[in-house]
Length: 293
Image 1 (spheres, rainbow, N blue to C red):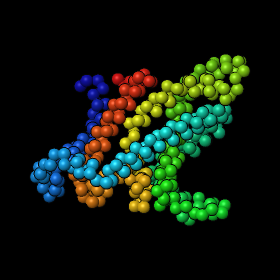
Image 2 (cartoon, rainbow, N blue to C red):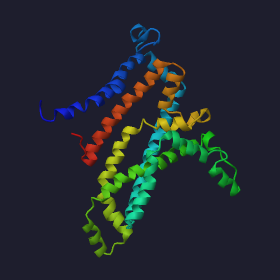
Image 3 (cartoon, rainbow, N blue to C red):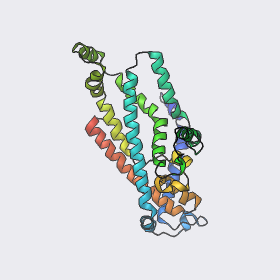
Image 4 (spheres, rainbow, N blue to C red):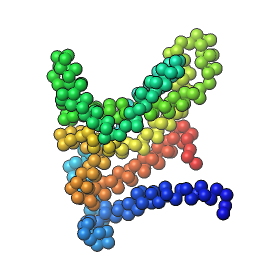
């Protein structure tokens, strides 16, 4: 037996799970090219070629769900990147270690909370009789139906996603900040630079590559607007502004039993996502010299 062979044996359970839940279900893609009938199965259902894809683009909802997906995904990416960067820069200026770690822990904690629980918290806070509307009424304003308004609900989705995830992104920038040579700050201080000048001329250039890398790699998530979050928060009143590809596939594929149409929509999304991953990786190599291999 070769040295280290037992380590490879430890991979077997993980490989089995990967094959069962990630590889084997891929055979279901054939439904996108069939008039699928569950009683006949894959082999007995008639083939229709590209008919499901043609029908998909003829649906009035097609443009809307793709627009909502891209809009929400890009908004979340930009907001998370900007807020986590600003927060990391401000947190880096705190010299009291205990206070710094305490704040970091508090903002990082929501990342570990599931959207089922976090969505319930958001729904309670922004409901018609929730904390936010109570405060608005105390200020003499009319209550707002955040959970039923196509105007406010997208902002609620972006804001709650940032609240939950920006602490995790902050850690990446804080790790990059530790790599800046302290001598640069000392030299800037000797030259008369204040903390703001040091941040602009030393800190930001020092993590520029990391910022570019995170921004570029985020492009691959343009087609992922947050299925779990939206599924736990939205309702038919806000479908117009929050229905995305994943929730649409869930509704028509599982709830309405249009398996072939749901598979076609999901397959198209996967193909576009693969293209975005390739593009983001090429850009990461060009602008940040980032390589996987």
